[in-house]
Structure formats: C-alpha cells, structure tokens
Image (spheres, rainbow, N blue to C red):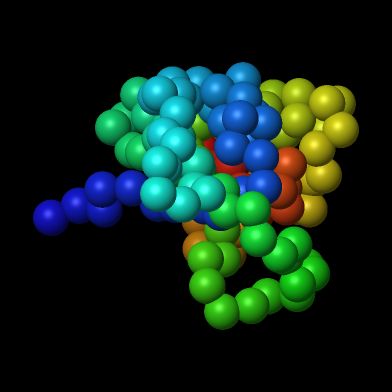
Length: 127
C-alpha cells in the first residue's frame, strides 16, 4: 500500500502548478475541466513517483489564517542534502516567497526549512 496522491485546493491551478514545476521539478499533466460543474484540476508528478493534485472551485474561501488548524499541516519535500535545502530556500526567499523557518537541524533529526507556497501552504524542504 502507498499514498497515491495528496490534493490541495487552490484559487489558481495554473499559477500553483507553475510554482511546483519551477522550484521542485514537478511535471504537470493535462488540465481537467469538468463539464458538469465548475471544477478544474491538474495532477503534478515528481521523479520519485509522488503525485500532487491541485483543485479549484470558484467558491473557495481564503484560508482562515496562519494558526494551526485541523487538516493538512504541511507538505514535506526531500531535496536530498542540507546544501540543497540551503540553496532552494535562498532561491525561494529571493523570489519573494515567505520563509517561515530558516534551515536548521530539528529535534527529530531532519535538516529542513519551512517555506510558504503561493497559496500559503507550509512546505518543509528537507534533506
């Protein structure tokens, strides 16, 4: 058994897909547009086989704020080394993406940083 994919609601499927393609090497599949309701989605594939589905409905509300809430806490992406964590975090910061946690060694042994994607989803970039 394995997790087939994780899905994220977004207001901008194409924009969020471009972020994951540019910075994380994702490959975007063809866009899906429902013919029976106003729903759009796109699957992103990663070299490891992991998949991320980006989904949009017109009536989506913005997130309730930065406080922790029930639901998905973060998405962790392993980039292979502490050097790559440092490099990618710096690239994302220079591009204007919010860094919530600078690269560091955590108490549970990870080397990671925490960056927000364009929709404010927390990404742990790990070695």
